[in-house]
Image 1 (cartoon, rainbow, N blue to C red):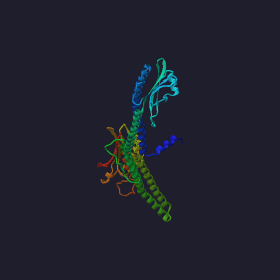
Image 2 (cartoon, rainbow, N blue to C red; image 1 turned 90 degrees about the vertical axis):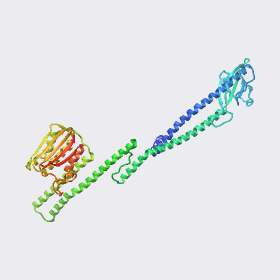
Image 3 (cartoon, helix red, strand yellow; image 1 turned 45 degrees about the vertical axis):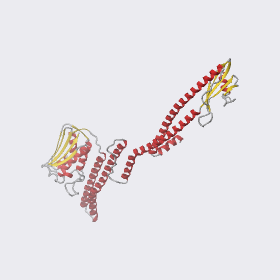
Image 4 (cartoon, rainbow, N blue to C red; image 1 turned 180 degrees about the horizontal axis):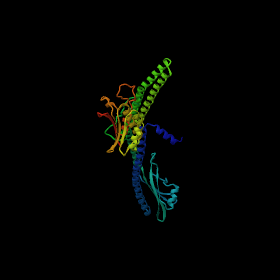
Length: 457
């Protein structure tokens, strides 16, 4: 792994707040460095321009004096002057210089050939004494070539620049600290709800039920939307866990009775020798209970599948086909019982999920044939964009106290749990209606029972 990859891996392992603070610090450092560099460059340019103007003015006064053969004029405070001949011998020099040459041999040759030279002596940092800016130009005096060197001290300019650097460094450091602190507080404040959500999720993981995260109702930022999403997820998890608990409780409660009956039948059969007829009767009884277990398991699994997904796939289905398919399996049962099973369907289509609606309608017909009396009539109509499916029989009707809980799981009109049916048929019908965004309703009309589904289509 190369150093860049190691740095990235190290950065990703840091806490989010630390990464945000580092990102703010690095960004602010770059911004402050750019701003400080711009300020320094502007001030340095202004100071250099002023120094160059002073040096050029002093240089011109020296040139005029040398051409005229006059005494060299004094320059700005701390300035130096030197006049050389073409061979580099010092003809005149400031007292502070004596016979020290300001020009290097290379610079001397350049000036002799007609070029002008300007350079600095000494550095800004580290601090050195005797810093100068000099300028040398060739001048003709009395037919002879002369080299005039003018120099001004840079002390005030360098001191101003060093002070500027110190002030910029101090101001940048304070700004960087303040920005980093503000970034830290902002990041902590922004991530505090996330930490609260994490603590809430930990509480959920510990087994607490019906947990809701405390999401402010007066905000709509990214963190708040995350909280609403997590609450929605927690609701779904809670509902899923509740369905699982209810499924296990229902299954264990309802499977106990047929299993107990089967065990009793087998124990009685094994208690003493039995005839072939008695063993056949026992096997038939066990077969009945096994079929009851299969029907109960299938009903529970259908309810769980529909409740866990809540998803239906709508497509146009002709009502006549839907109704005929639902009652086809019950025509023979009705005929054997000497009862009439009729259907009436509108000649139109409905946008529903026939995979679930067909067995739901079949459950209603089966209930009517099993618990009702007289003729059974199925009717399907569509009006104002809603599908209404009704199953009517001519039985005695539901007990009045049973109607409010008719669509509950394992609700039965009779108190005994050993009778026919699992008590899940109407619960399945209600689940199908709810998945379609509709309702299921049962009532006694004085001539029997009407169970109706009202669905948007």
